[in-house]
Length: 141
Image (cartoon, rainbow, N blue to C red):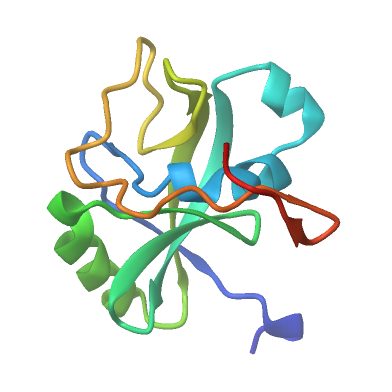
């Protein structure tokens, strides 16, 4: 019996790794998941877990924030691992970095000493959220 609902972790097999999708739409989640020091010292190493969202998508969670989606090329493999893990967390390491356009991105897998590849085509389908101040939407320029 686990006190306070703590679940054990199961290491995920993500091969050489991949760039998580939908980063453009999840920029706010990245800033919430990272500390100010981590945002200055990139790439920032993080621990991530995988969860299924209503059975349709596999999401990547970092510090209780959804920071990406598993791209189609890895989705079935990771989904099978989530099912096999049962109530345990399926987890691995990752690195948060900024791409050439200044967009926060997440590399999922073993640390990469060099640069990061581009996300696979079709990985970013959601548009960026509308800018807001105090909950009020700002017009798009």
